Structure formats: C-alpha cells, structure tokens
Length: 240
Image 1 (cartoon, rainbow, N blue to C red):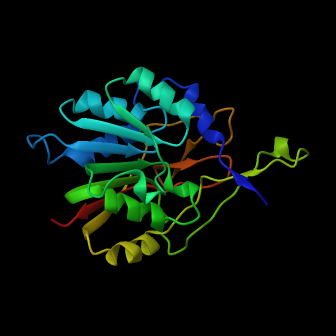
Image 2: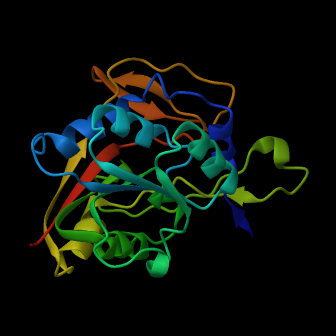
C-alpha cells in the first residue's frame, strides 16, 4: 500500500491573510505574552505552507525577523509573493542539515507532525535548531489518552481507481511525547494547552476539512474521517 500527501494543495486556492485562523491568535498569544519588550527574535515557521501564519505574526510583531520553510515549491512561491521581505526556504523538517544548530529563538510547527508515522525525528530537529533559552510551539492533535494512533485515508471516489491512501491525521499521545521530551537534555520543561474554537464551523464540500460539533456545551472539531480532534498547543522551553 502506497501513502501520499496531496491535500496541501488547498492552500493555493485560499486567501485568509486578512482573516486569520483562530488558532493563529491562540498560538501568538501564548508564544509572546511575556516577550513584549525583549530584543528582536529570530523566528521560523516550519511547514509554513503559503505563509498565512507568518503574515499574522509579522503584522502583530513587526520587529522580529521571520523565516519560513516548506517542501512544496508552489506554496513557497505564493508565500514569497505575499511576503517578499521574509526569507523562505525549500527544506524538510526531517533533515537536520536544513539549518545550523541553535538558529532560532522561537520555532513553530503547525499541522505538520501528524503527517509522519513517527514524531521523534521532527521534534528532535526542532530542539536542535532552537537556541538556548528558546521555545518551540507545536500545534495539532495530541491524544490525551495513552494511545498512539496512525491513520491513513482515501476518498471513496478514488475506490475504483485504486487511488493511494493519504497521510496527515496521525494522533500521538501526550504520554508518549512526554516520555520522549523528558529524555532530551536540552529540554527544561514543556506543557500542553487545549484549544477550543470560539464559534461554530460548518461542513464544507471537502469531507477532509474540519467542522465543529457540540458535546457537553463544548465545541469539538471533527471531519469526514470521523475523528474527534483534540487540538492542542505543545510549548517546549529549552535550557540556558
């Protein structure tokens, strides 16, 4: 069985720079709440897609220096056209030689690590690339139960074509991630912060896109994979 990842093409047809995602606001608030008067930070968004999050950060925190990486040339071209003053690179978060050791004060990763069947390499590289006393912010699903879940999916319209299965919705547990991080000598501490959408999201034609449902007066994210998404921000602080 062959696995692919093609769903990221959706970002080529979207234009949400002026209407940032609620998760962007949540991440920015957590990442900069104690840094209002500190010196300029070197900040990288790994897996930046078309640069929407970087656009939001630069608008909110214009004095920092920003960088973005992705493996798709088409998404990087779009990002460069919107943000010509930001440096973008076609590099993989899985390749440690993509950047020198201790390059950035703050490293961001959103919607990326569930693509991989193992999170350790990706997280290790982020630690390697982040400066002493720096911080890493990883946003996506983290299973609060002690179970690591690997998921592959295929649209039923591709059944007769024997289309490939897609990746992108793996759900690693907070327990496994915690065990891994406690073994990392440069990690000072870490914490998980739950995110809840502040308003309802409707279904879209694309069944893989997420929407909200109500349960016990809380909004839960779900999609056509029938997966409840425990969206969470992992904050990792490094030692001096």
